[in-house]
Amino acid sequence: MLRQVADGVLVHESAFVQSNAVVVQGRAGVLLIDPGVTGSEIDCLADDLRELGQPVVAGFSTHPDWDHLLWHARLGVAPRYGTARCAAAIGEELSDPGAKARIAEHLLETEVAGQVPLDLLGLITGLPAETRQIPWDGPPVRIIEHKAHAPGHAALLIEDHGVLVAGDMLSDVLVPMLDLAAAEPIEDYLAALRLLEGVLDDVEVVVPGHGSVGRADQVSARIELDRAYVLALRDGQGAGDPRIGSSARPGWEWVSDVHFGQAQHLGL
Ligand SMILES: [Zn+2]
Image (cartoon, rainbow, N blue to C red; front, side, top):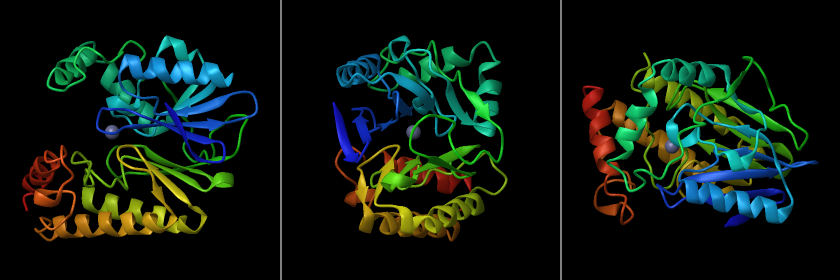
């Protein structure tokens, strides 16, 4: 079911890790950001869009993780974009013929095993570096590229409607997940938070890749919480975050394992 979060901006939430697909209404159809997870959910989204009489005219993936790179034939053949770095990262991964089988195998450990359409995964066109807006016929969508969480990660600012699509940052349920393959994962994350902080005045609603939609007053609080987590991780602490340990939301206790895995990986 599509839910309106701002004028012309709707969200379709997945049961899998509370993933949010974002729909932006344009002149001749919609921009679809991170389409969703299971085949039946994407089907539901396609039904909703048909009911609205809105074809998908463009797609965008915020970063090169499988759960943000999916697509389905029912969504049509609109161009799908990501940043150049995002497209290069998934292109390299998919150049290994065993890549999709590995993703499918990883999914076997999740509740969506066998339900995720992988055929059209990752078929995105990289937008040249320094592209400031998504090329489409609709309200301007600013690309804020950074290196937190994954290479070529983009947050998107739908300027006219005050909506920040954060990708895998600013979640109320997931702690910051660092790009542990990067040379400076902590610094990269802090730099990305500063970038998002820089557009705060233009943001009334934040839609995280996973978790609850946040209103204006919650956006700066989420930036602060993410920064406090990353700084604590850097300083060898971090167990006080409300998203981990006994204060985690029911069902999200596994986020503690993500935290301890990161701390261990960073040698803290
Ligand atoms: Zn994700």
